[in-house]
Structure formats: structure tokens, C-alpha cells
Image (cartoon, rainbow, N blue to C red; front, top):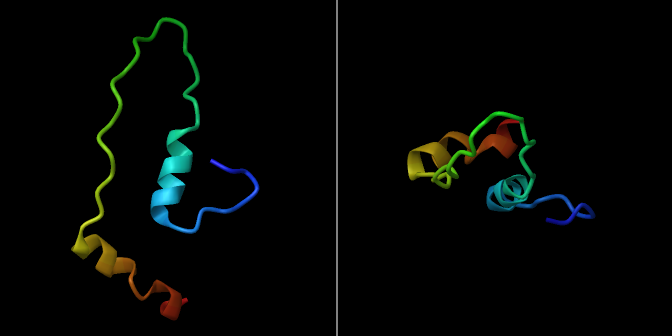
Length: 54
């Protein structure tokens, strides 16, 4: 993660966010890491032309 540059892709944004440490809450058990996000073609198609729309 670099605080000097903005992420240019969704993958870079997700990777940056994954590096943010979780706060420790007294009395809670650690949880297992979530499965990585997957973007399928249908999801990508929903935002494919977003730049043209905006």
C-alpha cells in the first residue's frame, strides 16, 4: 500500500484495504480471514460503461 498514490484498479483498492489492521476488541475471538472477492462478468458488466454514464 502506498499513501502517495491512489489505487488505479479495484484489485489495488482491495489489496490496500486488506492491509488495514483490524482494531483489537478485548474479549473477542479472532476470526478467520474472509475469502477474496471475485468479480464475475455479470458484475463487471453492471459498471463497464459507468464512465460514459457519469
